[in-house]
Amino acid sequence: MPEYIHLTQTHSTNLYLRQILESNPLVEEGLVIYADFQDAGRGQQGNSWESEANKNILCSLLLYPRRINAQDQFIISEIVSLGIADTLNSIQDGFAIKWPNDIYYGDKKVAGILIENDLSGKVIYDSIIGFGINVNQEEFKSDAPNPLSLFQLTGQHFDCEQLLRSIINRIFHYYDLALKGDTSRIHSLYMESLYRKDGCHLFSDGQKHFEAQIAHIDPTGMITLEEKDGNKRVFAFKEVEFII
Image: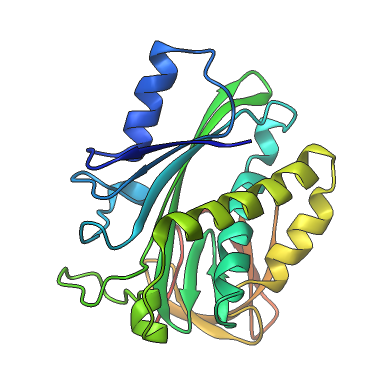
């Protein structure tokens, strides 16, 4: 069963969890650190994450996915994003996973995930999974282009700890499937849950805009986009972006 440690404030829940792991390498899998506020929260590629104190979910989860090959580590993104999306869709249908692992409602971002895998040979030795979810925040003041909270969406306030526990339970549901080798089912569900999974949409490769549809995502997380003329292009994360 997961163990929860609640902090009033910290720099970063991922960093806090990493420090625990470095001082005690025998800490059990499933440790969850969650905070009311963090002053150095970050997302992918060092992006900052705006979160008003006591309003949102800010947490990190420790896993030891040592039965998962390092080359297949994208399954961790699929597990976590599905766990969050499933839980939010139980509140209101319409949440989707924007590749690789942001959670969107329509064209608005509700949650972000930062996964730090420590590899040992051909396996994942440990995984620190940080995520932030906009829950009860009523207004966003940063220059982030498209944030949305559950409160803004539904007009309701939510118990962050209760919601977090539901999410962790759902993540472990998919994690157990992965450890049993049922990764194809997880990947199928991930593909079905993708943001803009149907039809052609506008993308940018940093040089120009182009229209394409999502054709494939492989176990490493590389995305294949198919343009209208049938030309297929493969990208890693940050090599291409959705135009929203």
